[in-house]
Image (cartoon, rainbow, N blue to C red; front, side, top):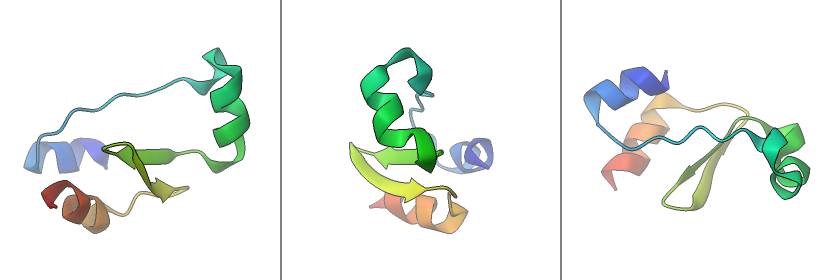
Length: 58
């Protein structure tokens, strides 16, 4: 789904493996995936394609 939206609206993407960081694992372990846009948490558990498009266009 992210690849489809990136094809329409190019954006930088960083996939972070939280198992490499104890703090990140504590914060996000039960809520994967978590998507941040410009440092703001905008999606948890499920990424809504239309919502992502709106956030990227804002």
